[in-house]
Amino acid sequence: QVQLVQSGAELKKPGASVKVSCKASGYTFSDYYMHWVRQAPGQGLEWMGRINPNSGDTNYAQKFQGRVTMTRDTSIRTAYMELSRLRSDDTAVYYCVRVRSEYNSGSPLDYWGQGTLVTVSS
Amino acid sequence: DIQMTQSPSSLSASVGDRVTITCRASQSISSYLNWYQQRPGKAPKLLIYAASSLQSGVPSRFSGSGSGTDFTLTISSLQPEDFATYYCQQSYRNPITFGQGTRLEIK
Image (cartoon, rainbow over all chains, first blue to last red; front, side, top):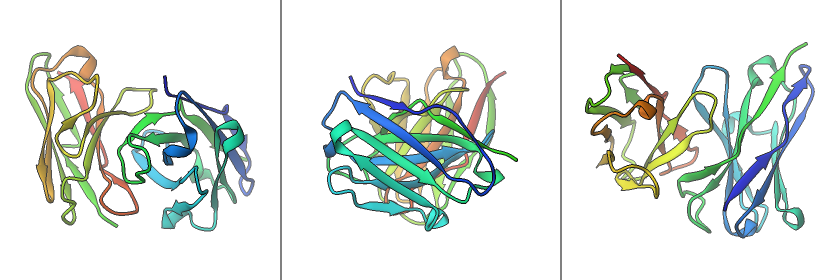
């Protein structure tokens, strides 16, 4: 079965960077786009961007351009999301999400990781 | 960016009730509209995709309709496990955007 297992909670100081990992299993990793979505405490869902695990090509939300980097390591079936210059309002749960259909970046967001809480505080 | 607006923002209902949640897009998105359910402390779950297609394993009391700019999610007979927050999401154009959510509470 499809599983996405994310790295553990992080506590970071303002200005630092965080890198969250997402290890996939149960499917052909390179065939399905991976998105990253975050959710601040008590707030809604916010799309950050996506990566094509086959090519490594990325698309980022304008809001995060210049601060976010999404990468992948196909040899270990793992996607990464790194966010730099952290601020207190970056405190959120970060999710990796696999799309429903292969080779389709706009496919619905089907399989979600368990989420990684990133807390930014001095 | 395409703005997604849900109504109502919160809703109180009883077990067995029929409930409808509305989602409006700021421009036409054809049928590129998906619905998610999120229970407290859990990741969202895909319920409906392409406006009206039921995701595998989702109970048939959930249904979706609409196209263009106006969409609805209907729960025909509320069950205790349906009390959660519901989000619509457009996948028509980048950036992907979500509605603000509708919190469904027990009356």
